[in-house]
Length: 262
Image: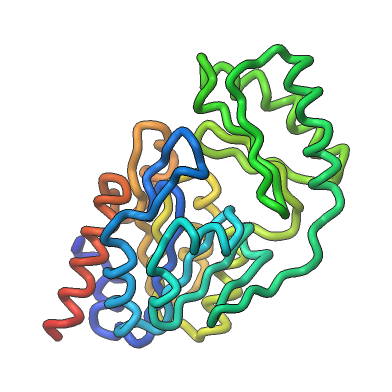
């Protein structure tokens, strides 16, 4: 691993380390249909071994926690795993999910989306009901980037109308409730677990807040970008850049091997 203070702290004191990870694009490859996503075939086993050494493994995702677990068979067996779903509004731990009531603005916005998309004449756009959020995907559109640009302002207005915020991502605009993001969720978790070091790996703009939380944590930290051609901002801010989920899993393997040798 790259010789930086954060990695040295994790390697010297794994029992004090929190390993945080995004799901889509980090543990699971990005695919045109979000429902068809699946975790990297080796990820659950690697995280299981990692969980035996570190203070905690936490997945921080925009997906519902139950969905991440469904798409990641074997994750439920990772020792001490916590899944913070919906950017931290929802928490899965020890087989149980806790969360506040769903915000009323989400189903109202979702009900208006088909008419909005129809009025804009966009094609190949998919609406994903995420329970506490709703996502509009353009990856299957004939012009994914152009369609995304067309939708940005109308989606922002619809979100504001219903008291929601827009979370931009890789060919997706997500309407979700305000008041929580991956950075805030990670910060609260690090404090809760009295972390002595932290690593966070992500791939998209929503992970920038988690990168900021690592920098502000007051303990040695490492930021890892699961690199892609679609998002460059994260790579510019990362301590380590790897090649997608395959690179993330390889990095985690390197960590577990180092722990096993110590």
